[in-house]
Image: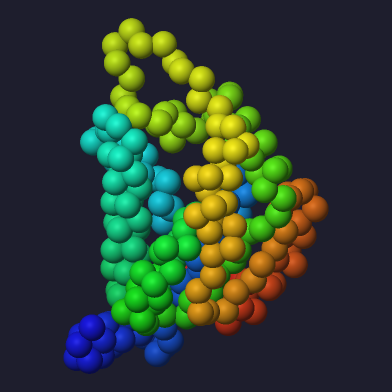
Length: 225
């Protein structure tokens, strides 16, 4: 990016108190609890939440897909829109929480994003037992607890009169499409906090909030001010 453009973004991003906006990235495998944690932390720190899956579901409903490659392209598009929208928020001097199951091949793109949009960035990575996450993931699909298009492999919407297929992902498929793509250990060069969420009830949320606050250099409710 040309130096002048970087300078302009840096000037726009700074708030009235001279500080940069805050970006909290939350990453981890599917079913690790990213959305739940994001909503709680965003409420504490007064940040809006941008989540890739929300964008992807909007694309499912407005564009749809006729095969798996088209479905993958919607994922690529959702990631691109997520970064574009997050960049606009940061450039306006506003803080936010960005949620995604980042893949290893996205590391360079995220680094470029952070370089292009001045902010105080930190990553909260949710880790734990992948077998437990798979069981949660499969149960969500079994009971229809999320948008059905996430589980459909080759077309959406369903055709008129088409029966609902079995959409429960096998353990092997979970490993292939999520773990083997580096979602279990995604990292970028910024301050980070890693927390084991195998048992969500064992997570001390107050202690986690304090760790995130220290990582980002902000206080509770600071982004409301």
